[in-house]
Amino acid sequence: MKYTTEKKDFEIEYSHIAKTNGHSTPAFSLKVTRPFEIETKFLSSQLSYDMRDGEKIEGIQFSKFSDLAKKLKSKKSVLFSLPQDALDYIRNTSEEIIANIEKEAQAQKVKKWYWAIGGDTHKLYVSADVDTEFRPDIKEIEETIERNKRSIIDELTEKSTHSKRETGLYAPAGWFEISDNDLMEIYNSIVAQKEEKREEKETERNAIMEKAVQTGEKQVLSKTHDECNDPDESCDIDEIVEYAMPDGTTKVVRHHTW
Image 1 (spheres, one colour):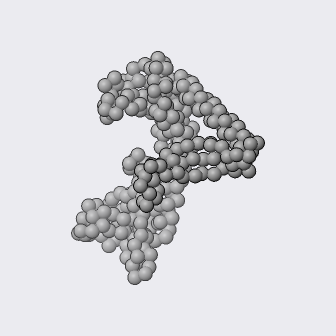
Image 2 (spheres, one colour):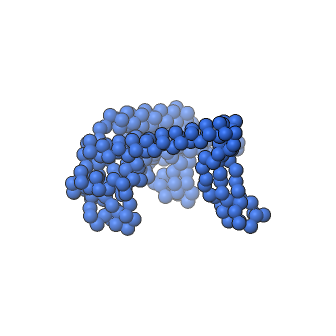
Image 3 (cartoon, rainbow, N blue to C red):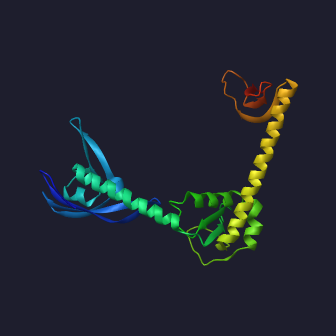
């Protein structure tokens, strides 16, 4: 796309998708022919603005180490101002490209998963064979498996085989791989057990609430501890008690301990 303003002529075209800190960011090419000549690239995330004499000026923020700053012999970052149609082109193109990437990501099906035990942390690391940047559903599965290492490691090991996968992770035993079907069986089992425990707790809680109503006396629903919230009290830990009240409500009371 070619643009002409009172002070400059330039072209902006979409270039490619760049990965910055694990995030997909559209990159564009910039070719300036007036008042100087230069060809360079920038990321959509570099769009910024500055206030000049009370006016908001929008454009591309180039660092002081960029080719553009060097071209202008600037020791500071440079804001290359853009007209509104150029800003719209960059933003609209970026949104469209990211939307397409998200759509493609949703269509990807996991075939297998990889996992390893960190040699320093002894933590379980799990990853699917697809990019999870736009797949929170897959990230949730990975995190659930990782959190439940102790209860599922034997079954996970039994259903896995050694993998040739190599990463920067220090894993003395190397990486393993497991089919999507086998890992989902483990995951679904974890979810089912958690749901069962949640229902048990809810049933127990409802019973305590009902007892408070029937007896007319408050009942303890739960007890936790927290740091003392009163500097005038000579205690370190407070006991937080949640009560079921006779009127069907709940009440939380903080007790200082000495």
